[in-house]
Length: 281
Length: 116
Ligand SMILES: Nc1nc2c(ncn2[C@@H]2O[C@H](COP(=O)(O)OP(=O)(O)OP(=O)(O)O)[C@@H](O)[C@H]2O)c(=O)[nH]1
Ligand SMILES: [Mg+2]
Ligand SMILES: [Zn+2]
Ligand SMILES: [Zn+2]
Ligand SMILES: [Zn+2]
Image 1 (spheres, each protein chain N blue to C red):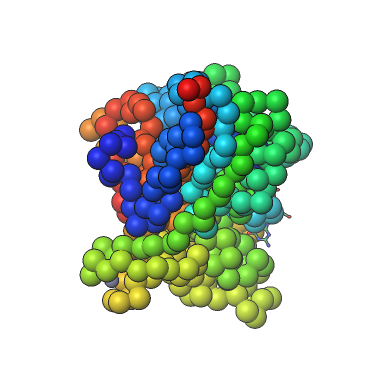
Image 2: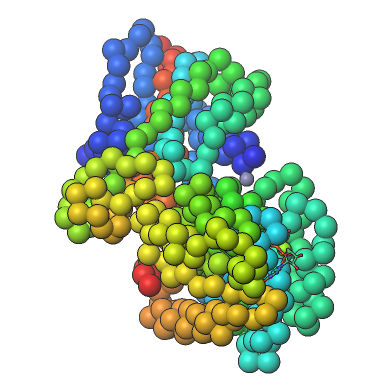
């Protein structure tokens, strides 16, 4: 919050903010404000809604067609007897995905974004005031299929799950570092197709994520033959448990979207609702 | 294309600053943009050209400074420069590193003429 003591000045930006010789009447105002502040403030507000109802919120991101909705369908089949689940679907067009989820017997809310290629915290908030959160254990947000923009937007959720289907190639974490650096869990999907592909290496995919200084766990799944579903379900259950422990200590957690550099260099979001602790795996 | 909505935020902030300083005219707006922010500078520049029309910043120039990717190793403490998809410490090969520069999008400064 402090421009006076110079703690915003880092090796990366020192040269950029040194005052130049002023022209007549020309003043340079140093600001160093994060341009995602609007979104981040709304995201913190959304998280307060979620935490008030003790619901764990997971954001699923991937390129189009990597299997997000199929994964949700299989997951809901296995969990709907024991947990109360809802889904927010983000797509450019159509309500197909929400209908697929509703067919599984759980509430689904469709956001059609038109031309916007990602969800943001404001779009999620609009839905929140129409959907009952009370009694929910788990809320999934299926983001717009896109490996670029969604990574930069905190929606007020708690965990980022990034899907990588085996047909996309094991180099995608290196090509889309912003997305894969933001993953709290990487899910390699469509593993039933591995026998037909000679060049997808799960180890390479993991190594490429590791190179992004991200030690998030990697799991493999197939929504077709249910390979890996048990591990994925266990991960979800343990995340729900850990989150309940945090909440009972009046803490919450943020997904990895929070940009280290942006936070170090910019003014902090003006309000925090209650002690927030980033929880590490 | 979220560059457009980011640019709206930018203009909001700049207009507030202009009002605070009773600026007559704004000469330039300087942003710091890291390669890992996920923002395309060209798209941001285009959005700015569209949105600035008929506002107090209509005459302003947008300067986008690309910040370097710098990591700090949490194991050996070394600071080093790094590339987009390789953020491993070159000294000790640990991937327990923190980005200290390279993923930011910040409004660094506004150069304006005050009414004196
Ligand atoms: N072989 C195989 N196909 C799958 C699997 N999961 C999904 N698919 C197929 O992949 C296609 C896309 O699946 P979706 O679940 O709709 O993917 P999505 O990520 O929700 O797609 P968007 O929401 O449009 O981005 C469909 O034809 C699915 O049947 C899988 O585990 N194995
Ligand atoms: Mg889908
Ligand atoms: Zn609200
Ligand atoms: Zn976008
Ligand atoms: Zn090191």
